[in-house]
Every structure is written in C-alpha cells, then in structure tokens.
Image (tube, rainbow, N blue to C red):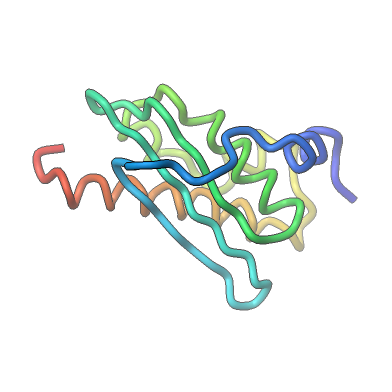
Length: 124
C-alpha cells in the first residue's frame, strides 16, 4: 500500500519529538481518522533553523510529518508558508488517495506554527 519512501519515513522518522522553547507551535487534528499532529519550529532571522514534530496517527501521517521537517528546515518563513499538502505528498512519492488527508495535516500544522510565531512577533 505504501511506497518505499513512505515506509522509510514511517519506520525512521526524522526530527521526531517535542522541542523545548519553540518559537512557534501548530497543532491540528482530523476527527474522522483520529490523526493529531503537533509541529514545533525554532526561528532565527526569518528562517526555520530547527523543526520537530509529535504525531499520533497512521504510517502516512508520521511519514508526512517527517518529510515535511526535511522539506522546510533552513527555509524562510514565506518559503515554508508556500509548502502545500500536495508538495508533501509529492515529496513522499505519492500517497494512496485515502491517505492524502495526512499530508494536508502536516502542511496545516506547519502553517499554524508559523502563524503562532508571527502572532508572538508582530514585526516578523
């Protein structure tokens, strides 16, 4: 059902775990499937210098969170805000149709983390 890249990110997630003193946090969930994602970002000079995640969900949800962290580390906030759910799915080499909502959650959690950071730093 899942391709090799999805399985790799599921079995060996990158940047998993809670971050101490994050610059911003975004949390989203899907009541239909029960997946919950929390993204933590550390921002310096308008760039995401570190990113971590906690995800409770299926293999696709964990893989989406993991690959997202690799995609945006080092990017500016505006570049990270431009990342879409389809970008996440494409970076994984595709997801089954029934699991595309998992990549939606990852991008949404990232966008909420950036919004949280910006609300705390109005000049950002």
